[in-house]
Image (cartoon, rainbow, N blue to C red):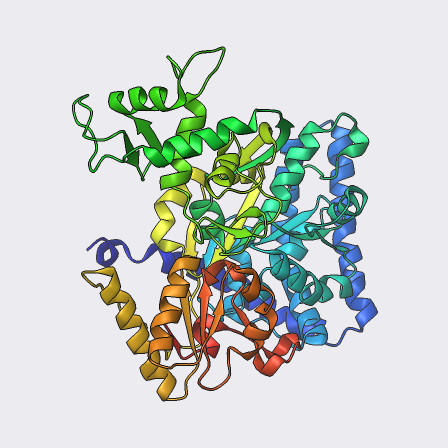
Length: 545
C-alpha cells in the first residue's frame, strides 16, 4: 500500500542517477578519440584540481573534516568525467565496456551506499569506477575481498585499468613483510582481504615507533560480499596474542574429568539445577557446571575448591567441557599430523597458524591427545564491525543485501540500493525445500544430484562442514555417482586447483565446503585466462543444490 501511495523509494533513487548516466554517455563521444597519453593526462588534470583544493584548505587553516567535505564536492563534480575515463580505459585494456547499470552501481558506491547487484552483473568491474574517482585525492582507497586469491586476481585484472590511467595499485597478501606492506598501502588503490587489513591495524597500534606503522589514515573503502563481512562476520574478533606458560598436565587432567562428567539433557529453570553434571547453551556457546558437577569435578581432581586462587581449576574444566561439546572435529577443526588446525566457519578453509585464545586451543589438543602448545594471552583485539566503522566513507556490494537493510542502516548507517540487471533475467529461482529430518534432507540432495548428473549437467553442492560434505559423499558413492570432494581435509586441499578446474565439465559433480567464501570462480577447461572465468552460482552451473 505504501508503495502504491508513495512510489518505490528504490525506483526514485535510480531515477536520480539517470541524468548522470546520460552525461557520461555524451562524454564518451568526446573521450573515445583521445590517445592513450591524452587519456592519462586527464588523470593528471583531475589530481591537479584536488591538489589545488587541498593547498587552499591548508592555507585557510581548515580542519580535516572541512577539507574532506570540500574534496567530496569536487569529486561529485568530477564524477561524470572520471567515470567516462574509466569506461574508456576498460574498453582499451580489458575489452570491457561498463553498462549503464554498472555506472549506476559505481555512483551508489561513491555515495557510500551498498549496491545490491545480482551475481554475474560485474560487481568487480563496477568497483573500478568509485575506486578511481576517490583515489584522485591521494588519500588512498581500499578494495576489500574475502580471500587472498580474489584480492590477487582483482589487483592483477582490474588493476590494469588503474595502472593504464596512471594510478599505482597495491596488493596485500598473507606472507608479506612489513616493508612490502607499507609500500602497497601507500599506493593509490590497495586490494586486500578484511583479515589482513584488520591485523595490520592491530599491529600498527602495537608499534613502538612510527617507522613500524604500515597503514595510512583510513579514507574510502569498497567491500565485496559486504553482507558476509559486515553482518555474518561482524562480531568475529581479530586477536593478536602472546605466549604465557601454564602447566600442561592441567589441560590433560581437565580433559579426563570432562570425559567423565555427564551432560544434562535439558537446561535448568528458575535457578534449579537440572539432572546431570553440566548444562550446555549452544546459542551462547557456553558450558556451566551444576552443583553436582562441581562436587564431582573436585572429587575427581582431588581438590576442595575449583576456584582456589593458589591452584585454580574452574577455567580448565570449563574449556575442556567446551572442547568436548562445542568444538567438533572435522567441523570446527581438523587434526593434521600433530596439530589441531582451525577450519574457518565462513569459508570452509583451514587456517594454519591461527589458534583459539584463552586456553581453548590447548583444551582441544588435550581432548585429541595431541602435543599441547603454550597458551597465549590477548595483546590486541578488534572486531570487523568496529574496524570498518573507522573509515570516514564506507561502501559495499553484494548480491544479497536487501534482507539485511535494517541492520546495515542501524549499525553502519549504510543505505541499500538495488541496481537492476543489464538484461531481463531468464533464470528461474526456485523456493527452498524444507524436510522434517536431516537424513531425509541429505537423501533428497543426493537423489536430486544423481538425477541432474544423469542429464549430463554439472552440479555444485555447497555444505557447511567437513562432516556434512563427507556424509553426502558417502550417499553419492552408494548410488555410484562419480564426484569430487573439496573440503578442509589435507588430501582434498592439495587437489583444490585440479578440482576447481574440472568442476564445469559436463556431468561433473563437486561437493564444496562453504563455497561462498571460496571465491566461487570456475576456470573453464582449466583455462587460466581471466576472460574465461564465469561465476559458479548463476552462470556456469545450471543447477545449484
